[in-house]
Image 1 (cartoon, rainbow, N blue to C red):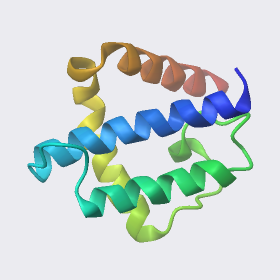
Image 2: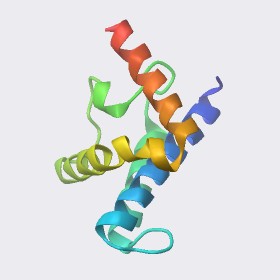
Image 3: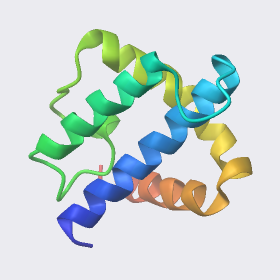
Image 4: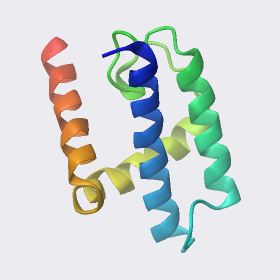
Length: 108
């Protein structure tokens, strides 16, 4: 997989997860509220400059945490909420996400 493709795939996944979170928690009907949009934009900036993108699977498994504490806590909350729900909303993305998790656990 090419690096840009991997970055775009990660951005799509994070967008999806934040959108599910915002829709359910903030009762936002279309897209994302301002707070969630800012979190998504922050995550995209981090993804764009990640020096470990070629070898890493998820930010949570990275040795260097480039997110600020506040954003890290918020993205963790989003992931915990949206992760289990991904299977109902986008099974293909959920399975791909689970496969990446399994690959990551085997490496470590």
